[in-house]
Image (cartoon, rainbow, N blue to C red; front, side, top):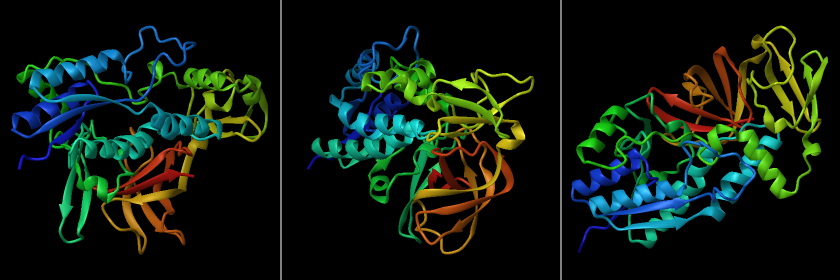
Length: 368
């Protein structure tokens, strides 16, 4: 009986292309699948001239197909636009309007790349999937549990976006690049003469032109029929002094400094946004420091949960250096209190909080 194929999620970039080529070179049966997630012609009001690092473009599909033909594997494009809008785009917009800062990449991983994609893999007879993520997976016999670990190249590690993965998903997933550094991956791609070896990396919010999320939100709200004035409000200091007006709380995120539209002669940062009053509060850098917070909807990955307080390193943003903290269980097993050893800057509601023990991902949740 022939070996079941491995379904590789091919984005058209160097990482996923290298994964497909590596597995094919090892003699594994491979099927390439590209997920069509967003119609870039959907919002014509967006300025996309010169936009870089976007997903789902025709060029990306062409690049993925070209690599599949080059390495001699079957290749298909799968349309997940409806699912992507339902589970990623709409929550992204709703979170910003609610005064929180969402992470669409995590939602995409949870509901598309490691959920619907596994279902699609089943349809082509694949028992395993492989992606170009920089992360590692291992099975721990002592705990009878799959564990998630940071990639060896910490500068490219993507486990911050993967804290929602389940045991069932981890059991069927391969991360072939987890033990490699990015330069080594590019060299490997060049050694296999892949056409995308020199292709640039994509941006994090792949459906937003040039990272201008506010412009995307405005265009999406306009298409949805929401009146712009419904999101207008005041900008005030932490003491309540009115400084000016803004065009919507969705234009602001905690810790933001640029683009506030007000000036007082000293640096100002967004301290909080209130969707009910449409008020944006600004203040000094020291006012951004927080000693603790609660994380909800926690998914325990490499452990089953907390029975007692435990020490961990906690990341509150992708580029945040994980800070030492104490994790305190609550009456709700999916809610945890995080107490930092030293107060941290810009703890932002809606962002992910991921808990580490060294390279081991203990779990993660959403900052309340």
